[in-house]
Image 1: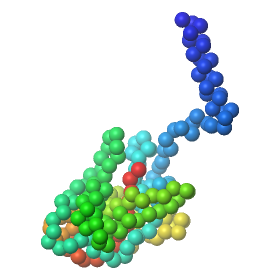
Image 2 (image 1 turned 180 degrees about the vertical axis):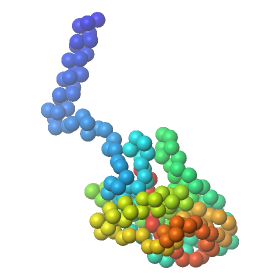
Image 3 (image 1 turned 60 degrees about the vertical axis):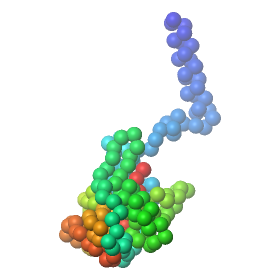
Image 4 (image 1 turned 45 degrees about the vertical axis):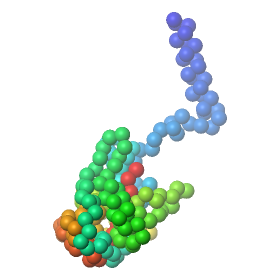
Length: 202
């Protein structure tokens, strides 16, 4: 039994050292851990899960200064407002955006602009952006100073003290905004024009 354990230990050490000999550090196999304020994953990380492996990223710029949410008098069912933890990190913003884009696949509404947004950073292209839910906009407001500082350091823009569209639908003709002026959340008719900043999850 003892000789078996020794042989197993030698084999383990041999494999470990072999990785270094061939120029591969075993630690490189680890999933990178992120923290709030990192410029990564296509933008500014403003929320991370406790293990640091998943989180939310804000675009470094407003992708529109004036765009409508959608058509009046059409109920889409984009009423989710949550962050989902578990095996897969999911958010309501992504769920709502998918419903809006499926309803208006050929339009240029707020959700469509986010869905079509693309950022290339460090050799990677990030194309899975979406219109944030109210909860995500609230988190962005909380981390506003960090998002703005990092964004501007990389050629981006600060937030305006104005309402930003969320992906949350209140009624058939009304969706919700989050104001970066007074932190209020308001019901607005869908064909009004407001600002948009995109988010993605990783």
